[in-house]
Length: 187
Image (cartoon, rainbow, N blue to C red; front, side):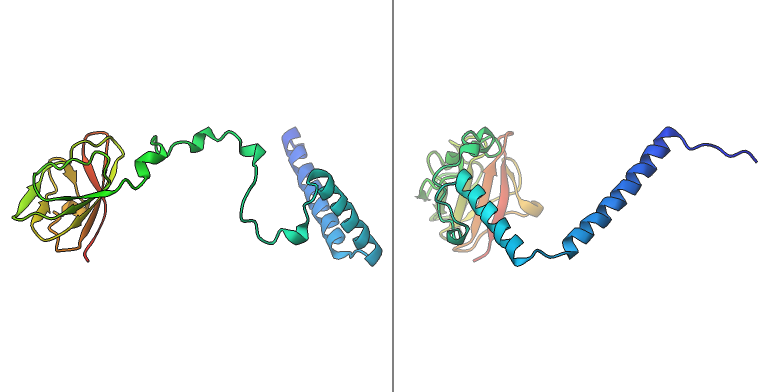
C-alpha cells in the first residue's frame, strides 16, 4: 500500500495547531509563576507613570465613581446616534396633554397625551395632525370611548379597546397612516 503525503494546507494546519498548543503551555507557566515584591512594585510604578503621561491628574484610586464625562474626544461625532429609527428626539419627548370631549378624529398636533372624556358613547376613527413615528398615550376619562381594530387602527390581538375609567392605550403612527398598538393597561 502506497502512503500519501499530506497536502501543504494540512502541514500548515498541523503546524498552527502545534504552535498554538505550545503557546498555551508557555502562557500557563507564566501565569503560575508569581512576581516578587520588588517586581510588583516596579510594575505598579511603570503603570502609574504611563497613566500620568496619558491622563495627568488621573488616579485609579480616585476613579471609584464617575458621575460625568467632561469630554469625549473619541465620540465627538456620533451621527448614527442622532436619530432613533429615523426620528429625532422631539418625536419621543413629552409634549403635554389635552382633554378631548368631542369628535371622532381628535387632533394630536403638538400633543402626546390625551384624556378621553366624552359625555356620550363615541368610536374614534382616527387621530389627525400626526407625522409617522408619533407616539400618543390615551387615557380613558370614562367608559364612553371605543377604538376598534379596523380601518386606521391595528390593535394587539385584533382586540378592540373598550376601556373603563383610567385604562390606557399607547399607539404609534406608521408609514401607511396606520396607528399600531404598543401597549395597553387596564387600571
